[in-house]
Image (tube, rainbow, N blue to C red; front, side):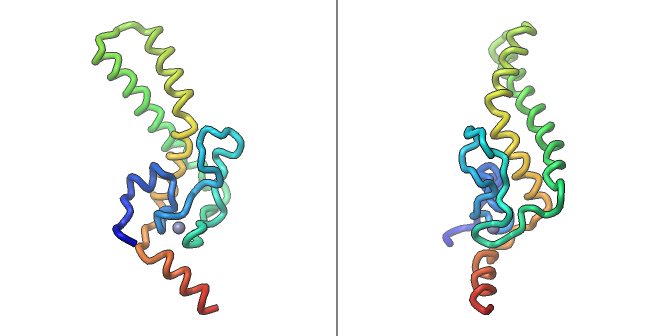
Amino acid sequence: MAETPNIVSSIIKCKCPKCREGDLFVNKNAYQYQNFLSVNDNCPKCNQDFQIEAGFYLGAMFVNYALTIAIIVAVFVAFVVFNIYSLVPFLITAGIVLFVTSPVALRVSRSIWIAMSVKYKPNAISDYATQNNSK
Ligand SMILES: [Zn+2]
């Protein structure tokens, strides 16, 4: 392994918070609407449990709320920068932007949520491999 994977990029890429290499989601494409929110049961690389408890990802709802507000504020700032001060175009634009970004925002909010409770372990993959070989 060359360098430590960055926490921000691993959250955005929806990687396992423990090893930062395994995929969190079953489906890699956020815009493939079937199962786009299905989380793997375990990390394919380090075997970290992704189903920590029943209803674990309900908490991601709060993270998604914050992301949604951030997106709306970003659209508002863009309108202010371009000197557009009318409500209806703003609401239409914000609605379109939220519709387009919501699949990604939902996945990233789950990724942020699990990253808040699972600690990064640099040797997680090799530890799991040696544990498997010793059995
Ligand atoms: Zn992992």
